[in-house]
Image 1 (cartoon, helix red, strand yellow):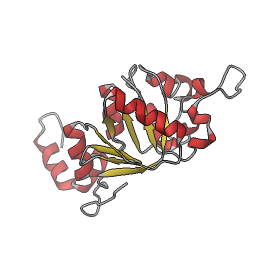
Image 2: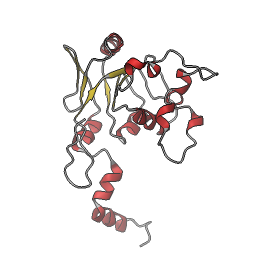
Image 3: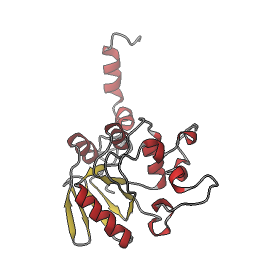
Image 4: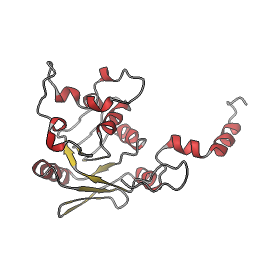
Length: 208
């Protein structure tokens, strides 16, 4: 991942993400599947990664099931490859937080729930879309060739692997925020204290 911050306090730009892929097949995978609600009773998000897709990965006796997140071939992968309407359901920010802490730096899929994509952006995780045919081909390739290097080019809206280049789409506002390093609103506020004070002083409902 690129990290070309403009200066002190600036978030790193995310122009591209490179790594290996991990496929998770299925449409309408909701946030409760990504991180079950019982694991959300935490003070911080630290440690959530180990519970990502927990109920899809383990049975009632905590025995592992057939799931890519249990497959040693995909350990260390940082590009998640999914299908349609990924991240639907409740708006819990714990879902992208769990993926981030698992090690996911980018998600490539057919489509995403809007709030999920927004929560990913807040963590600097690009959500990149491509056609169902292109996603299916990428998932199949990664399943057969798990060591394949994948480049997710956010700025140029392409995904490259092997000899294949896929045209993708990144929401314009998301792409600009990632490439310009404006995706971390907390960092932006901290880096611009004078503007924050000036804005706060102009608000009629802020006392002092």
